[in-house]
Length: 403
Image (tube, rainbow, N blue to C red; front, side, top):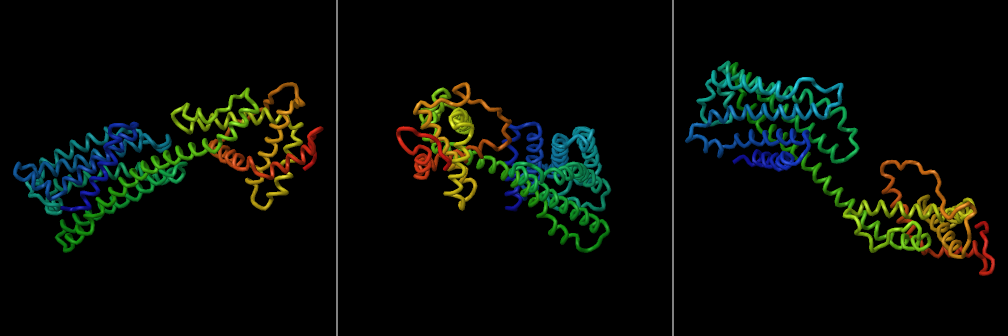
């Protein structure tokens, strides 16, 4: 048994079968191509050929291989049409190419002597003197060439620009696998030419080229599976990160909720109010920021914020801007909470402060959550008490001073 061929077929089936049932049109086209390639490889196994010998299906198995190669190429061509941008999208459909090729394959198979060939991996080299057999191979190879001519330029041009790592990995593996399959086809073509001319070396070319196609297809399947595995890992990692951030923001959310109850900041017992922690984290971050904007109205037009930044930079200036910003944020929020608790009124005409909000850029939720986690980490830092002592020097008349 050829274990590399069997392993490649197994990888192709594992990567293709789930998408054949659950997937978008482009994913189903990819799954059809992968499963068709798996069938082609399985028909190459000696054990499968031995099963077909008693029933006389060895010759039809060769035709089935050719037809499945065309089906895989047509599916890959169809996927390329779906993912290609408009300027590169071919107008002809996959069926318009695949059906005529399949008809020609059947006619050439009927006219050739391949249907009576014994079980062997060298069917076409053994019939290199048969024009119909050579024509069958050429027509069969034309489908993958056409599909690769459409798919490879798209992968090369747009694959590196994908924003997700799993997409770039899948594209890189697909490109590398197609190149290996192309080398296998070129080696097979050279073997046919050498055999037709009666020159020595056809067997050596066959030995050299036979492993290339299974290895190339295995690389493609590995890329598809790696992309799926990365998607699962990233989803699990995002779930844990969001859940951990929720836990770390509990204390900060609870204190801001108590200081600004009108915003109803989500507390720890509501962590499972939505199924996905990412959605709850989004609500938590928005609630904390709404409460902080309300408290911003207590700091005399931003004077306390400037003082907090100066104080944090004087104490933490050597550890980085992120730590300075987190300490400054905690300082002025603690000041605003204490000022509001002592009955101080905001300078503006209202209890809540609603500044103009700009749209959040992609990825800002994770960045904002990380920053608020840093604020929560320093929320009880002794330096904040030092800042508050400078802001409120006595219990009788507390006013903000320059820190």
